[in-house]
Image (cartoon, rainbow, N blue to C red):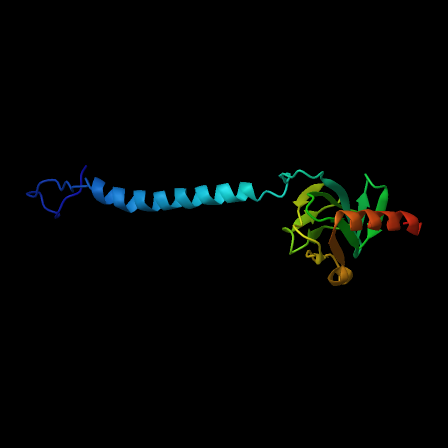
Amino acid sequence: MLPKDRACENNPDYRPDWESNKVDAVVWLGPAIIVVAIGTIVWDYTHRLDPYLPIPSTQPTVQIEAVAQDWKWLFIYPEQGIATVNEIAFPSGAPVTLRITSDTVMNALFIPALGGQIYAMAGMQTQLNLLADEPGTFVGRNTQYSGDGFADQHFTAKALSEADFEAWVAAAKQAGDVL
């Protein structure tokens, strides 16, 4: 039964005009176009900035394994046969692939001048690709609260010239310190 305009038997059925296609189009299509446009831009830039994407370069990629431990970082260089604690070095201009994990609790590796924050979790591996355009020394740290000593869990990231990187690797091999 259709609603009545007034509660009386003499009035005919009330049939409102709900045909407002132009108003509906303005009200719904305008915001829909804005949402689609913003969504497309976000999708594009999110995938362009994916930390897992390799960085194209003519130079070979340096592979480094980063292991978060209690209040320190262990960096392993499988190709060079060395490991360091709280210091990471790589040639400037060459892409770096960090494979990141944790020995204990959840941590987050972050070198603000070079790339985004990536979590390190025990039993899992994440990845970060970086590139330093020119030589420099950068601060790296754990940005995930992981206990009393987390505020001191920082490290030095050094982008070196190719010759300086080779000298750094040779010095690390000569040090003879055992982890």
